[in-house]
Amino acid sequence: LARAPHRDEELGQRVVGPLAASLARATVGAFDTTTRLDRVPRLIAYRRLDGEASSLVVACGIANDQLYARWWAMLPWAAAFLLLSGGAVLTAARRLARSFDELERQQQALERSETKFRTLADHLPDVVVRLDEEGRHHYANAAVEQATGLPPEAYLGRTYAEMGMPADNVRAW
Image 1 (cartoon, rainbow, N blue to C red):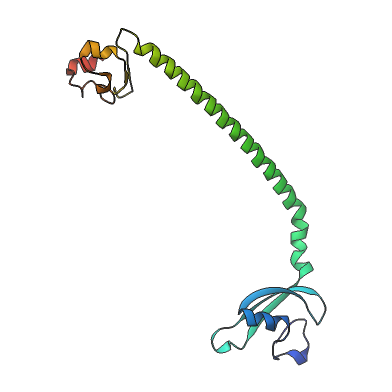
Image 2: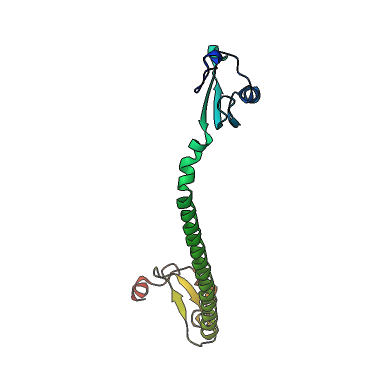
């Protein structure tokens, strides 16, 4: 055993006390104790060496007041940071919830608008189709069947070229 502060008569002696009890449980670890030599509360970390040196133990202790001094000094700043970041998270959560509510309202409005469009377009006597940028059909009303003989479903997802329309007509559309 060698330690600082130490007594010369303890150098090289067998490990006893809390360190011996901890070594019996694990070869590596840490524990809190009050040292017998100076009665100072310390955090002790230890490790039994491997190989031929397995009878040797390296241990290091630091006084708790030294260990926690920096942490304790930083506590007000850490608490302020946690409070401010917690407030920011709450504010962001509220804004996100409002955004989801607004998105839900917009989705419902879009569905109502689409229902109105389909109701109107489905009952018009004229052909009504909706195409995307590539010319693919996304909607065709019932009047298309009277005009072409093909049901509206035959148009969906297809371009006029895929449906066999002459190239000159496709370019014109």
